[in-house]
Structures are given as C-alpha cells and as structure tokens.
Image (cartoon, rainbow, N blue to C red; front, side, top):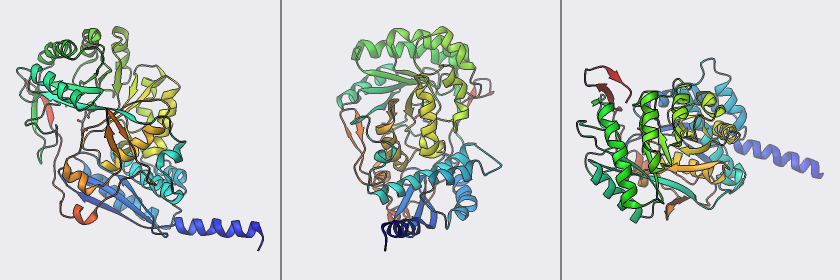
Amino acid sequence: MTIEDNSQLRAEGSVRDREIVAARVIVTCPGRNFVTLRIETRSGVYGLGDATLNGRELAVASYLQDHLIPNLIGRDAGRIEDIWQFFYRGAYWRRGPVTMTAIAAVDVALWDILAKLAGMPLYQMLGGRSRDGVLVYGHANGKDVQETVDEVGRYIEKGYKAIRAQSGVPGIKKAYGVSNLKNAYEPAESELPLETVWNTTKYLNVVPQLFETLRNAHGPEIELLHDGHHRMTPIEAARLARDLEPYRLFWLEDATPADNQQAFELIRRHSITPLAVGEVFNSIWDAKHLIQNQLIDYIRTTIVHAGGITHLRRLADFAALHQVRTGFHGATDLSPVCMGAALHFDTWVPNFGIQEYMQHCKETDDVFPHDYTFREGRLYCGEKPGHGVDIDEKLAAKYPYSPKQLPIARLEDGSMWDW
Ligand code: KDG
Ligand code: MG
C-alpha cells in the first residue's frame, strides 16, 4: 500500500469515527433549571453544549429535539462551520434567542468533540493561550449602601480584583441584583413572573452615593462594576454615567435598552464612564452599530445565547477592530458547560476584557463536574481535552424541571417598564 493509500484510509476512518449517531437533550434542575445537549459520535466520543435560556428552557429543548437533532444524525461532527451555516443560513427563520441558543448548544458540543478527538484543550484548537488566567468579577450586594460596602470587603478578602456592586434602594421593595437572604442573587424565583415596582429617580439618588462610599472604604485599586439592567432612559443613563465619573468604574452595564443601538450615542456624548452591553444580544447584528461607532467598551454577549463559539469568534474579531473588548455574561443561569467553553474562549481571545463569575451552588457543581478553578481573582480553565465540563446524568435525573420565570417591572402608576 502506498503512503497516499494509507492517508486516504486514515481520513476515511476519521470521518467514520466522527459520524453523529445520537443526540439528546437533558433537562435538569439542580438548584435551578439547565438544558444540556449531548451529541455522540460513532467513535463513542461525545460533546456537551449548554442550551439554557432562563425562563424559556422548554422552547429551546423543543427547538433542538423537534428541529435540529433530526438534521444532525449521520452528519460529520468535524464539519462545524457547515453545520452552523446549515442551521443559521439554511433556515428561513433566522436569529432570535431561542434559535441562537439552540444553534450554540450544537456548536459548543461539536467543538468539544473535535477537541476531544484531537486530545487537546479547547483553547488550543482556537489558537492557543493569550493569557494564563482569566480576570473575573464577582457579585456583591446588600439591602443598603453600608451592607453592600461590607459585602464588597468580603469579596476583596476572598481575592477578587473586580466586583460588581448593587444596593437596595429606599422606597423600592425589590431592587434588581439584591438577594433576599445571604444567598447568591437568583431572580427567576416563581412559576409566573413576580411583579416588581420601579422608580428611576429613587435609584439615581442612591447609586452615586454607593460608589462614593465604596471608593472611600476600599481605595482606588479595586475594579468596580455596576449593572443598570436596562432601567434608564438614554438621558438618565447619561446623567448616571457622568455622576459616576469620579469613582472610575470598570464599567456601567446595560445603562439603557439597546433595541435602538443609536440610543448609546447620547450617553457617549456626555460621559467617559466605560459602557458594557449585550447579554441579551443573540447575533453580531445586535451590536453592529454599537461596535462600529465605538459606543461601547465591552461586549457582554456570550457563547450560549449567540450561536456558540463559531459566531462569537466573529463577533470578537469584529469588536477587536474597534478596540471593544469582551466581558462575557456569566450569571448562574448559564450552566457550567457554558462557563467551561467561555473560559477556553477567554483564555484565547486577544481582546479579552473580563469574565462575569457568579458561583453555582453545590448541587449544580455536582451535576456538572468541571476542571476550571478560581485563584486570586482569576479563573483558570483546565487542560483536559475538550471544554472540560461533563454531566452526571444519573444525578441530573434526580432533579426534575421546575418551571420558573424572570420577574417583570412596572412603574408606581402600574405602567409596564423594562425589567
Ligand atoms: O437571566 C437573567 C440574568 O442572567 C440577568 O439578570 C443577570 O444581568 C445579569 C448579569 O449581569 O449577570
Ligand atoms: Mg446584566
């Protein structure tokens, strides 16, 4: 047999090994709901993708089960780009959070398979390390300014170098980002949406006070972040961004809804506080004007909600051309599978900014064994082939789905507002 014959046989063998023979959706609730896609190849090597869309989990599960999985069987798992294009470009109905979350789950599972077959950690497949560890920010909150300041102190003691601070607001019963007990903040807490009441004037009176007290208490070095969670109008957001300038925030997030990307021009005109947005975006088109016009400094869109690694890579490269850095969403409603994939991406991406890190509860960590670790304010992805996150299906089966939706917000006169 010639060398050519031999390599032809090897290539055919690899394609046979990579053939997708099965795929299934696993829905579980170890502390909160998660949807996971598992794709298996003829070789027995399998990959996992996160498909969790908070409060809309079963819509994505159905999109996968009823529409994508039947198209996957028999395909070559190594044709990641073509499969992505098949599901995105091939579908007449494009984009939207449900579609793009389902495509992301497929894409991440395929990257996981490819890296496992290559025997390499995923970051290596993307182009290798750009950094040793990934700077993360934790979540501190309290019922008032002093409690929040104390909580930030506790995060500093735990080694965090960047901390998001959210405080309760006098006159608002349930301010965004503030937990009831000492547990991590978990907004999807009831089967039908909890109705909360919002007042921007009251909020705007507290936030500058919070950051003045934080800087006085904890000094100039710690990186401080804040999430406006889409509540302000553009001119209110501009005012807050300007009021916060003396306290040098790392970023002000979701200052105003970005459905109209031009809205950020007004904030930019008035302030030099860095801006972050995009956790609810699901494609590069949601961010095009914002990035091209340098209206933001950080793009929050992450792997699970925007078409996976294949699409995020394009978004990050486009952002790099305009000095916009990544700052991936990493709340607890994104599963450890998403976190694992995100950390490999963060380890590679040249224009990395920061990664959000809200720790999962023990039940979640037990269902999703993973090899990423936290040390001195940074997360480190592991060296196992793939993205390094697995699922214990027997344990997952002990936590049945529990329907929960995110809250809604109304103004004091009853009008609907952005939550
Ligand atoms: O599902 C919604 C949460 O992920 C979101 O409210 C968390 O805004 C958030 C953040 O910045 O983590
Ligand atoms: Mg946010």
